[in-house]
Amino acid sequence: MLVHGSRPLLGCILATALGCTGTVTVPAPVQRDTGSSGGTTSNAAGTSGSSGAGAKSSGGSTSGSSGTTNDPTAEACAKQTGAALKVGRSRLSRLTRTQLDHTLRDLLGVAGSPSSALTPDETVGPFASNALAVVTDLIVEQHQELAAKVALDAQSRRAKITPCDLASGDACVKTFITTFGAKAYRRPLLDDEIAAYTALYGVGGTPDDGFRLVLEAMLQSPFFLYHADVGPTGTPSAMPVSLTSYELASRLSYFIWDSMPDQALFDLAAKDGLDDDATLRDQVTRMLADPRAKDAVPLFHLQWLDISAAQLGSLASAQPALAEAMLAEASDFSNHVILAGDGRLSTLFTAPYSYPRGALFDIYGLSKPASFTDGTQVMLDGTERAGLLTQAGFLVKHYRGDQEGSVVHRGITIRENLLCTPIDPPPANVMATPLPPVAGTTARDRFAAHETGSCAGCHTQMDPIGLAFENYDGLGRYRTTDGGVTIDASGEIVDGGDLTGSFTGVVELGQKLAQSRTVADCAATQWFRFALGRIEAPDDACTLKALHDGFAASGYDVRALITTLVLSDAFRHVRAIGTQEDMP
View (spheres, rainbow, N blue to C red):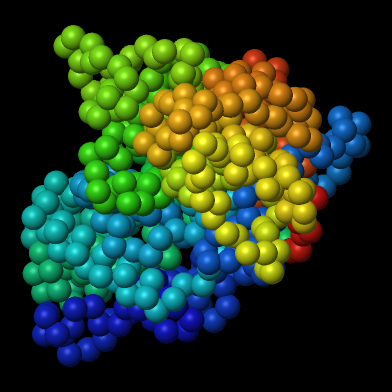
């Protein structure tokens, strides 16, 4: 059961509806203690303190990034050979909303997005990861209501979900609880868990109601709702320990599919078949070829660029079809590049094609090809558009209206999310006054005010990048004038390592990003954060160096990066407790 503080969520389930006069509780088994205090699963598996750089929760989110240019030298990492394994600490993390949706789909055939009824996920950097905030009464109630609704709806599909006819007797009931429970918990149930669920089934009185009660209870269990990675002892460790085969199977599936393991992964886990590099490589290849990879790959890119339906704001409310087309374009594009195309990071920034649909053809000034269907690749005008940064989803998300323009918002996203260079928030005493348009001026003229005074230090890192985006208006349409004045789309990257220098327009910016080791290292670090749901710590320094160097050696092939990440110490191990300092 999901618990909050020391208060059980589930006492007698649906007691009134079923005429139950007693109380049946399904306890979290003590043999699989997650290390939480007083039986709670509110925040972390016996952990406290920060989970690394940027892990300072404020309003459910963290700061954008930590720097990734402080890689240890090869010599420093070589000295670590033979020493104690170093892995950053992980918190106990609840399934994100998309992970819950995809798991319910694969476990029970649930369609749609039932998790939309839940409180929005926290973020770690740009990525969803429910590892920091305390579980509130509201969250508990939301999960209780969701579990009740899903279990009730599943009654009509009971024959497809159960391995036998529950009306046939106790043997089938035990088989159902054992087999379904192993999928829901993503590891075999313990004897006392089977006994508790069998007793709960009996409270229902009928196969339908017993089935529903078991589902409702399992869907509120911490072993369903959390990534309970603690290693073979079942208790949190201050030293890195190998994940169990079942934990590794789950970590792998939620990374590449954003969902639960399939039967092939469960079968490998059952025989400890995931403990060698060759098998893991084969599984990564197999899983990337599976249609479920088309859920996780665009999810990474949408979160990396800070785009979602909710984040498109008023556009999503006023023109939902257009907002959906923007999200679909970014998803189709990233899926093609990574899963069907050359897999190169550079292609994400420079490809002269995309996958527009609906009103995007008008916004892009394109004619719809004959016999066009959604998902068809369309060539672009390469002088105006190339890659993710010129797609409408990114441009609209980071636009803030004519008064503020989009200079700061587009610029800071490039700086933090693509260069992994955090920008400090403005001082509390700074009045962020919009800069109203003035006839005969452009955004460049208005934002010149940022070049002096106390704000100049940060704005010189953001504004010269954001000004290069001024060729795109609030809907992502290409323009050459602003207020009747010709737009100057020249830009500059200041203190950007190998990116430092000038450029003109976003197409040229994309070409610079595509050739940059700074951007490639940042992208590898962002994949690390996405895979593990946490910010890197000093103990991950050599894992990150291996990722960065391996990514470079592959020619910046993202599929090779994914494989290297899965084979890394940080991915295959867990350290659940202990202290660590933030990354520099």
